[in-house]
Image 1: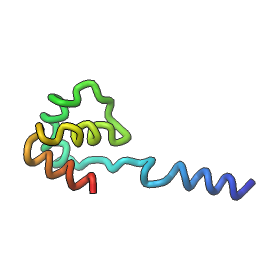
Image 2: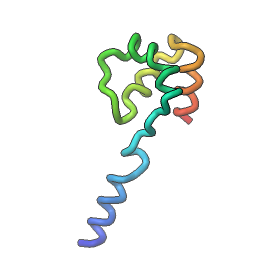
Image 3: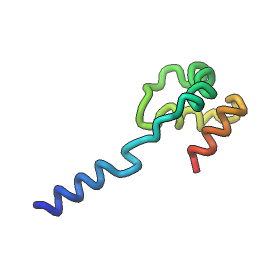
Image 4: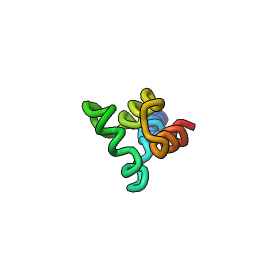
Length: 72
């Protein structure tokens, strides 16, 4: 039982479960692009970053750098 509980906690707390919170600088660089291209996307879980990655050829150069760095 303890093994199952430990494994469950490890899976829930994995890095994939927690998307990195963007810094104020990153938010500022991508805010306009997110408002324009990802308007209906709910924040959290990396959804906005994923949306921006899908349209990265249409976003500003500063935001594109951030999106590409986060994708690595």
